[in-house]
Length: 484
Ligand code: SAH
Image 1: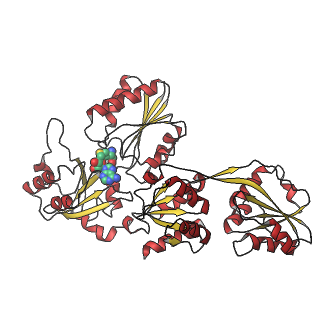
Image 2: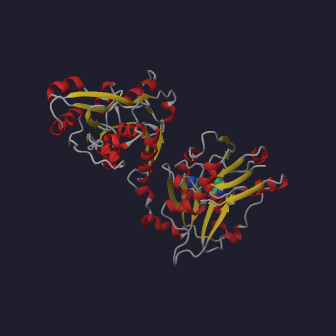
Image 3: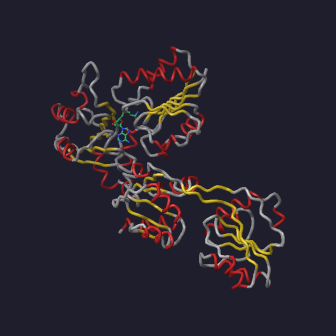
């Protein structure tokens, strides 16, 4: 027999998943999830993990609920670790209880991992505290749905509550909720906010009063998932709003670099309030080469991947003992010092030729100098050998492969910007488009001149070019662009 974890995934922002929830995702053989779960969470699962989407949201889904119950029981009986992922918290209108009843009937072990419920966190992300000293001393959470039997809340009692009122799943019945509250005595001028897709880059807030909000919500076409929050605390938003003020809030940014580096870059984008769409168009592959270091007097590195692959291939670090080492590029430098190697030289300009030139001071006429490169590095050993009176040789230690993704157009259609950190990523993008035109609503950001030129060669405008040619530098320039 396996086991089932019933896990709350939080309101949307990936980082609002708990550590325990993350572990359950990582350990799962099978994940059953619904519409409100951020797909990025699923990418934390093992590659063999079976992903089952079940749910039209967490609304009244009788049929779907039976199917969910059946599925988790079945999979656990196969001996699997099943993680049932739910938006927010499993027990806040999440029907976690019904699943437990089914598991108990089948004698299946389970654990419940609470999640951050949208009822408090979505207001937080819009700058509305559910309680506040001297403003609200309680908060009350309701479903805005009528139950199957058609019973409706006792609004006579609800209208008399002094605390903040929060309604989940209430968009359809918004008119009914507000008019009943007024009917039973709540002031028509009580502030109301509706928060759509809270804690995500698509968060949208509509503000009004009990009297005006229904019309406003209709005009602005508010759609679920959305939360209705009613009470004086809504007024604090003008002062407490923080999320929507983040530099990249509301921006969906596509990352095309290789998967490993994309993950880090995505994290940086999210820290600035943006949403990253990871769509790698490049893959780095080690060529598993044993590098011949005989007679080599100096070794030159022009990329982080080169350093990494080279050191992975070394069996004994001491072979480097009497060799001079030069690097170019800050990332290359940062990588090599991880191996406790302090480069002897590093030119300021990020150019292979400058690196070759810098090696002269550390070698003698005719010395053999080895460049560690990739299949796409512009390294002209013949020219430099002649120019600098040395014997430059190069070895390709890793390969940069283009990844052709025929779904790219669809994957990025809702994005605001696409980023390119190499000209091969640009080529892979064009090939992926397969003759279709680049969508001009999507801005283009490039890491430097060479990459920008490649973009323009394809008739596409470059909107942002990094002032400093690193991922961090690019991000800085993107932030500046949006500030303007
Ligand atoms: N168990 C969930 C609630 C499930 S009911 C929880 O604890 O949050 C589904 C309702 O939750 C939606 O109709 C909506 O009212 C609310 N909701 C969930 N996520 C939301 C989000 N990111 N933004 C706004 N409302 C959200």
